Amino acid sequence: MTNPPIDKLLQEPLLEYIGPLYKQTHKDMQYDLFWIIHNLSIGDEIEVKPLLETYFLEEALDIISVPETKEARFVDLALSFIGNICCTDSEIMIAKGVIPPLIKLTNYQNELRKDVRIRMYVAWITSRITKAQAKDRNIINQFLPIIETCIYDEDTQIQSDATWSVHYICAASEHGIQMVLETSITKQLVSLMMHPEETISLPALKALGDIVRGNDYQTQQVINVGFINALIPLIHKAKVPSMISELCWILGNLTAGDINQTEEVLKTNMIPTIIQFLRNANKMDIKIDAAYVFANILQHHHIPFTTYLIQQNLMDVFSELLTSTSIKLLKIILDSLYDILMVGDKMALHNHITNQYAQYMIDKQIVDKIEYLLYHDNIDVQGAAKRLLHHYFTADEEDDELM
Image (cartoon, rainbow, N blue to C red; front, side):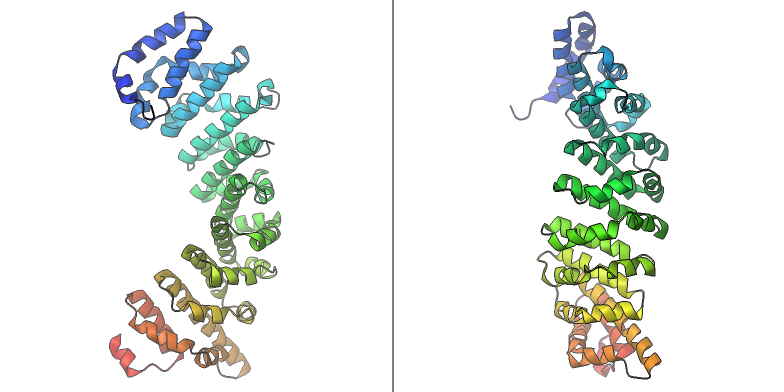
């Protein structure tokens, strides 16, 4: 039976009888009864709610509070049951006091910590709770020691769950990022982002991307533990679209920081690869993420940055993509071309010459493509095209009438 009638079972007086029977019967029967309750907990919020009022919630917490006095099979079942409950209602488990016994189970002096299954359950429960409670500073502060222990575990599943927990925390708030940075977790994330298994490397990358999305000080702390250098081999060997998109998003965050952080990125040889992602990626999301990297660099209006990107033929790639059907990509490119022309003006003023980037856009018929976008269906694309043309090129009266 693929879809057992759990709702009908819960409507019967079954739950009223199991609790008293559990207390009176022998161990094997107790296990079977607990197993029934455990299976009922694998449901949605409506199905799980009746279980919150049963004896077994307290029993599960009692078992993991003094696990050394219980059979291992009961500890496993209690942890699995608690994890199922946390998937639908983590708040009640926190209110009932689930955190202290979880911390106790990860203590290095606890013999049960040697059991990998125990550690797996603890890491899994932690990820469920941190996902739901990531903005609660007090709760996260209590869970960070567990996460810090689990993220250094040798088991890949435990590392994966711990790394996802860090991602949830850092994605939720800037103070969460700072709390993570005050532990040893960040350095381990840099190591794990190079892990061969994507179930570990992807959440590690996401967590680090979340951190560099924070303020400049927080971003610099990640750079200081070798984050940018660790990105280099990943960028060059990336094949999976989700990983490429994540890497581009991270570089976009890094280049949105201060000028020194952007310079650290440009010192590497990653830019030509990102340009290839922009030009050749089949997925539009990747093209957009890659375009944001260059948009953020160009927004610094720093002559050496712009000069380097032009030398890498970025303007030609932008020209190719001006025929894209993506409104978002067109808007990014038009705004980036405007930033390039602003730098061209700075160079022209300094060297007493004409704007060489404007001349290049005329010679390569890029201006013609932009003029065509004055007729685009989207008003934002029209506006971006008009702004560029009217500031740097002679617009036809026909264009004025159109707009």
